Image (cartoon, rainbow, N blue to C red):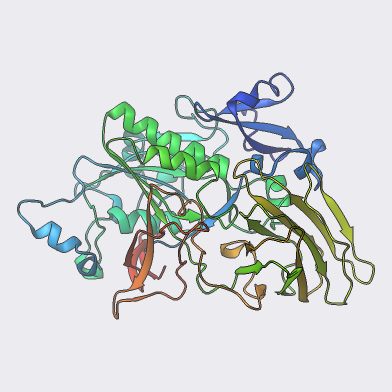
Length: 491
């Protein structure tokens, strides 16, 4: 049997751009295009078109944001038991689809089996499988339906029939907490143990989509484009079955303006307004990572300095500075050896590459006067081969106006804990798409003493919008883990 050619969305010889369909026509015929929905498409560009300053020739928002897993993780504290025990309610998720876009699922786990040993999964779309039958309307990966999963479960080696696994365990944990079967011996039960599951295993972000933001190949992360497609798949299943659906997003990103303006957040905003569709998003774990800084410039004050400590492990990474004021900001950067860059002023469609003289550090700086998706100013710094130590960042007020600005470092394990702002601010750290307006954004608290977990991301949005919406128990919770095991997780 001949192997099928690999789809360009999985092909490492291409990188992907996220664009609106109105612009897709200008690329048609020159590059391959994957349509997502009525508004967005993916352009697959060959690697020979890539260099670090391609961001400048193409707008920032066309480069898919990179997402990392968030732990969203008893029942008594949540009020779930009271709902179960109320004879007028007795809500266990009957008739509901719950969709997960994450690291996959251990479909053999007892938490997802009926009493007769059959599966509670309606289907799995594994985006990582090259030679499989994709879902209808989609062009890559492999879909496994309930019948195929049940056949696999009767085999001595189920993975020979349905070769989809969850190597990380995050998706299995999330699905188990939301809808796992009760296990009294383990003192465990999911919230909706009679719901049916639709699971998307995301394909990891590709090499060049990582490289443009300085992300190492070994880090588990996902491109916004594949998350889009995963949500579209879940919606297509729900519409075909005419069933109510809850979409669970347990991954997040610290890219963007933290105000719900990125493409995925806007898409989930719309879905959240559709009857019988609910979207639930994890708020993130950036509260105590020291990766956010808020500063200001004032009338009569020409500049504002803040410091960034960079660890030895973090040679390549990115940092973003956003501001909403009509005032314009320039910036300078000083390395640990004392060398300053020249002031970088806001412009359109430019990328400045600066190579330091006294050390091998290099930085690419895009000072974008008007970021197209948000209408805000964005200063994007992308570090390469960076010297460890304390770096000084100077924000220069070009206009004699008050302005506040926010700086964010990447989320999750995209950088180590050794890189942080010396005068950090734990607020405004809800990760995207948790800062969107309409989805239900959940943070975690310690159910033993009713205190918010110190690691939990905090609101508000960057413009003062309320986020998160609710807090759920998230300390030391029992949860399913791959290989039919149970473990403990804190959000």
